[in-house]
Amino acid sequence: MFDPDQVPDYPHLITPKSEISSTAAVRAHNLSLVLNLIRDRGTITRADIIHLTRLSAPTVSSLVNILIASDFVREGGIGLSSGGRKPVVLEFNYEARKVIGIDMGAAHITIIIMNLKGEVSNRFSCHMDVLLKPAESLQVIHDAIENLLKETGLTESDLLGIGYTVPAPLENEKTGEFVTHYMPAWKNISCIQAVRDIIKDVPIYFENDANAAAIAEKCWGSGLGYDNLVYIKLGTGVGSGLIINGQVYKGFSGTAGEIGHTTIEADGRSCRCGNRGCLESYIGMQGILSDGRRALANDARWAGKLDELDVKGVVKAAREGNRECEKIITTAGWYLGIGLANIINLVNPGLLILGGDLADAGQMLLDPARQSLVERTVGFNTRTDNLVIGELGSNAVAVGAATLVIANAFQETNIYSALRNKD
Ligand SMILES: [Zn+2]
Image (cartoon, rainbow, N blue to C red):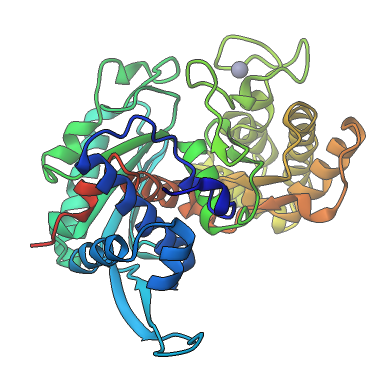
């Protein structure tokens, strides 16, 4: 019998399986075990699989044949021999299927196609007033998926699944309905149909945007190797994704990580949530833009165009030497540091990753944030690499959405669906 204690390097192998009762369930468990082992290693021999899983040689041989037939595994080169015939190396085929990641933000839609090792091959992105225009937004998503499939020649059977993120905590993980407190136009609207009209049968996974970005940075970006990290999304709103002990922490009802609505000034600015002094009222888009419009009111280059100002515009003006805009960014950094200090004192993450338009300010934002958080944290290690700008940039959320598919598809409960043959 497989002994989990023998393979401490593979935490996902340690699955309670006392309930496994049917042959199909045992086989699903073993297929998932072997597939994930090959995927984690990239390359491995049959002998190593036998050694690590304690499955019998005929069982491993039969499982590997199924994985080869489904195209997820290929026979590669010849491995090192420990005496006798040199073994054939098995490789995971990262191009076996593609995944689609949909990032439906408050003010943009980004959709990517990705392979099974986090590499983006195709991308669509546009500005969209998602908050106020649900029907138009869903139509844009529908049309963009249709165009991406046409452009790439991919069909439904080439897809492992679809990940879809929304800019609010989820209410229903199956239909994509989310908490509409800040987006009343979306009340009772399910996102799933826009996708199902085109792609009928592959699994769709929904997630909150900051959680997805945290997953993406952990799997493929700045957070590689960290089991405790926090991703802070500085977008229209301010949210965070918490990864604690390797897992996304969602809390009792899925709203954990709403860092934007923690109080940093007891009697401060009013916030869209109805409270005062929230972090978001200082560093969220509305706060930055109202300060930015004031700062640029006398700038001839912005005459008559201040309605078009966005956060990137304020960052750009600051970089070009506008002192008032620079002050807006450094003040935002200082407030951000207070919010980060609260996170650090509460959950002690190994890494804080910043993303979103305001993160484009780079060092101008990082320096005051670091200074302010160091003043407020207890025993925080002040290494300069503990607070970083995310490597995946504006793709983080969409890549995270796609990564959800990979994380779920190869679990034993879903493995038969993942392994169905391509047309
Ligand atoms: Zn608030």
